[in-house]
Length: 304
Image (tube, rainbow, N blue to C red; front, side):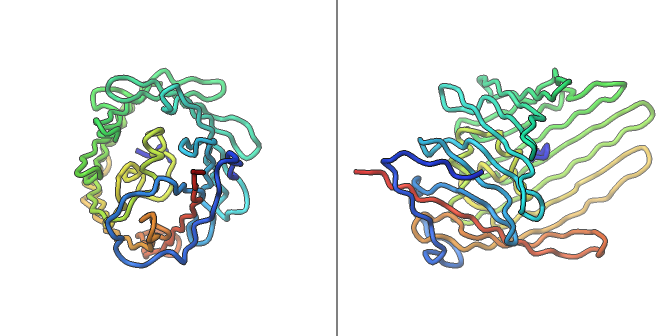
C-alpha cells in the first residue's frame, strides 16, 4: 500500500482552548485497560529512537490534520511537508507535497464516490491519467486498494498491476495482502505478500485522523501502515512473502514475525511508547534492529 509512502510546528489554537502537554508520568506498562477514548488528546509528534519522524499540525477545530513534516534521517532538518485541503464534508480533497526548499513536487487529488475515493497524482511537467481506487467499508476503513483488472501504468510496453486486499475484524485489519504484476517485452515479475495481525487493547492515536483522511495510510513511515486505520494497536504482525516469480528466478516463502509492546497513558489509553524489533539484512549481515517509537500529545480542554 505504501507509495511509499508512505508526507510542522503546532498552530496556535483558539483562545477558548487550553493546551497542556501530555506527560509520560501518567503512563503504565503492559496492556491498556479498557476505556472510552478521550478525543481531546491530539497526536503532535512521533519519534523513533530519539529522532523526530513526523510533526502534526491541526486547524482550530482540533480535528483536521493539516500538515505532516518528515525530517531528514538524523532528525535535524525537514525532508518534506504535506499540506491537506478538505471538502465541505471535512474529507481530504487535495494533498500538496513540498520539499525542504518549499518547492511543490507532487499533488494528489481525491475524488470521493460511493465505493470510497479515487486518487489522481500529478507532478510538475507530467500528469498521471490513471487513478487508484480506495474501497471503504461502512465504517470508512479501507478494504481494498486498486483492482486486479486495472492496469496502473501503460508506457513503452510496460504493464503494471498492483492491488491490495484487507480483511477487518472488530474494527481492526487482521489480514492484509498485496499483489503485483510487472511486465515488459520478454520479461515479467509477480509477487504476493501477506501480513496477519493481532491487536492489543490500547487505542490507536491515528484512528480519528484516518476518519477525515484515509489516504494518510500511505504516509505513515514505520512498517505497519496497513494498521493505520485500526481502532487498536497491533500486538503481533506475521509478514509472509508468499512468492516471487520472474522468468529468471522463483523465491520461496519467507516469514518474519514482529511483536510490539507498549507503555500507555492511563487516562487516554493512547500509547506513549511502542517498542519492536525488525529483521534487516545490510552491510552488517542479517540481524535484528530494535526500534522505540515515542508519541507526544496535546490535551485540549474545552472551556465550560
